[in-house]
Length: 258
Image (cartoon, one colour):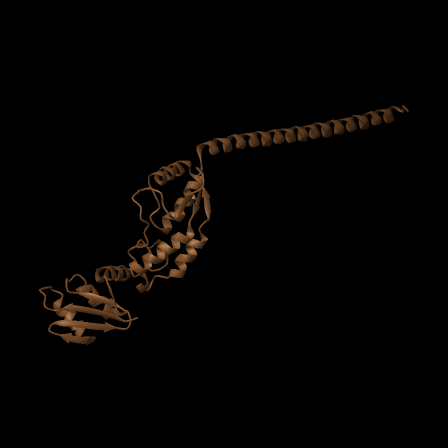
């Protein structure tokens, strides 16, 4: 990929001298204070120069001949230089990259892949979180989630992937050394296709079933306890009866009785 940074050095910016110094090391064309600097790879000079001039009104950035928003690309590399300030932790959790955001106004609705996965887990086990999700969805339906019923929802993975691919292109995430599109797509594939919301009614029914099952278990344990006690009493009785017989036989032997 070819990168060209074009800027006018006729400026009062304090970054001017350093920008010119970097530009002259990598100069492609210069004409009347206009510098056109070409790079064939993302290196330190490219990142540094872009950071110095991206805020200038005269700056233009071209990626393989197509003009790109220099401030957006610079923001990307600022994140990279900061070690993944936008959540990816230097690529260890690239699915948590906050640049991949879902268009939502609701505070409680998932805003990125990481929160989407967490939300799906929460709504399946927490009735309060499930009710919050349902209300948020009614206020603002999302194209990547399809409502099948009051309790069941489906994840539109194809739409989600296409939307993220557009985001990758628009935000130039393919330039980030940490970013791996295949990891993102695999993360989406691993998400459940459908999920169910936990309801208070289901919780009550489960509690009733649990109580009945516990009662049955308690009765079985009590029956087993009674059985064991009966066996012990029977064993004691048999031992006492045996002992009495032995004593009786001994008495008869001592007296000569037959």
